[in-house]
Image (cartoon, rainbow, N blue to C red; front, side, top):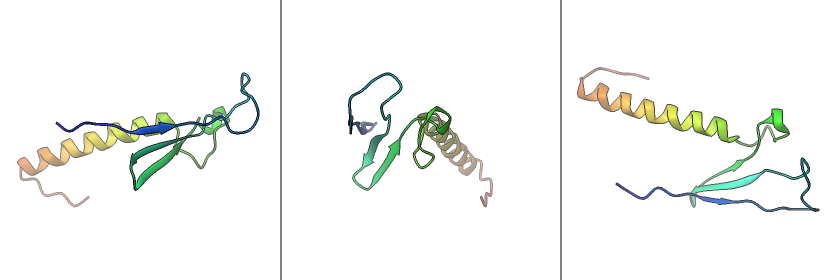
Length: 82
């Protein structure tokens, strides 16, 4: 099995860090060409433009589930279109 890794970075930016007064925005690098900006969900003062970790987990689990289904479907010789 291959090694699974990502690079995650966060910087304080402007000012000093106080409770409830700092950015959670951070960069997640999967490959040099695949990067996303992570952040709190908008309900928790995150940007709507960024990906929140809860959605990223849901996307990851859904993607793994789909790929397993596709693999099993091909073994069963099921015809799939989408």
